[in-house]
Length: 72
Image (cartoon, rainbow, N blue to C red; front, side, top):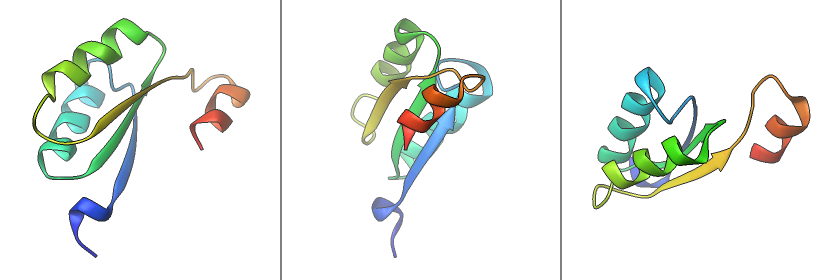
């Protein structure tokens, strides 16, 4: 299996460590789903990844079970 066949879900992907991990995985060829509470910060992260791979956003709050279930 190659990296471009793998998908990662990164919580807190709109800023900080989550953003850095999401961008690094995206640059390495992974398909990345970044999740976070604020669509605006997730969209900024997606713009930063422009041209380096596939990155999708999903608004979710990991403290809310129903929100987490929607990730999967």
